[in-house]
Length: 107
Length: 118
Image (cartoon, rainbow over the protein chains, first blue to last red):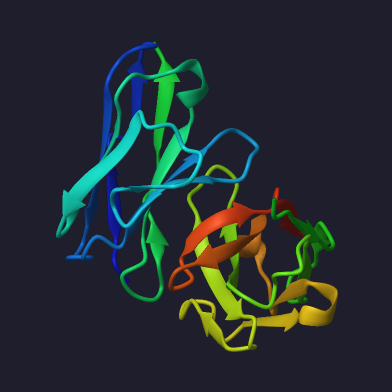
């Protein structure tokens, strides 16, 4: 299985901050990478897929980039509703696997 | 708006079979891929497997020997059976719709906690 390693595992930030979360795959995954947001007690929500394609209805402050094994989720200006846990997810091969999550907390 | 709702027992005894059903509130179950994904309390996400509306399935190799996913297109439902459960199978179980090659999950159920305990 391809292992997905996110960093950091948690971070504290303020409203308006630029936030970057990194995901590294154990092998190249050819942009087959999605990002999800999960709030406590809720199902994950798809934010981006194919590394940089914004899902319909997701605010443009979310963006994704990367290639090969290294990918990044950026929130350009953190909003109060963005405090949550974020997971990366590869779907390059079966089984698809998820990162362990990055929790974004209020500073 | 597609809605998914999981249903089934919240408590299963060790060695028994976990059975869940997902009801899809759309007439489009005869398209897309339909997955089960689980999340142990306080932990990350694990994809269990999916079924295409045609009935073809793909499972996570780590669970393949114990998993069966089936679809009932006439009732807009798909189901999960996981046999020989242990405490390690305690998790919130989500059903989800997948697009593209089936692994981008754009709609999810609210999740249902299944506890394995005697």
